[in-house]
Length: 413
Image (cartoon, rainbow, N blue to C red; front, top):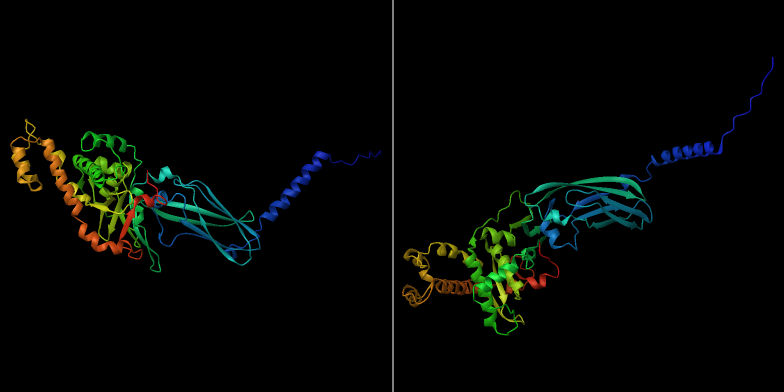
């Protein structure tokens, strides 16, 4: 029997390389399956600020786009100079956000604010509260260690928190956010300024250029007369559903909402008129008391003298309704004239009934009477509370200078 010796099989170089790579891959996979860091020792946490109590206020985020510290994360360093990476998954309100920090000392606990990359256009669209789920993934030296999920209650962008209380009872006054609803950049204001000039009260807007307070007052009156002609009436909708038990919240209408619905409460009308006053170069103020707010403006460039306006008085007389009820001759019927007679002198009434002045001239006289009343309405209250307005510890009282606040609070466009 003849034996044939077969040659030993030889592994080609390519086959050998593939086999080696496969073995290395198996080894690598086996190593990665074992976590180096214990999640219990890393103790990763993610939470909102205690003031918020699980609530998310778009008004806060939009007003402070450069200083968002709504969330914080904490970790205990498992080794010296460990590299922490926290990834916040995307949602309908935010883009993927990554935080990366060095943890210098083993055993030390570190806390970092997380500046989430918000979708600001989406935040502006939130008009009803809705839930939001956010996922925070924790990595140490590129190893995934833990995951935390947060469920938040997103509030309407119209909700302006006036104060927030932490669990230990500390109260944070956030009434300065009223300034975020003053919007001198609103595109409708340009047409409004044209309409105001068409009224014939002022020929142009000069701000403080003339140096005369009476010119400033006349410009403010022209804006006031526009609000009366627009027919802005008083309407209170301050209540909000399912409020944060540790927050005092006010619903505020935006500029275009007041313009289109012609309804406003005290603060709505303040931010509406303040928006126009800022656009024409005046410097408005909003005075906030525990249960009320009213408008002010400086009558001089050096900001020494303050004039006041009670904005709810715009609802005392419905100018559009008066004009709608004119008789065929363009005159006010006796019944309508009686409604406004208390704002006119006997001579003014006689001049009108004798046809020495027109209906438009009469309504300007009524508007001036209301303007004077609005200017004096809060005078005693203002003088009595000036010390409170100047005292930072008097939480219930705020004197909001919109121009000064613009350094930190932007309009919610």
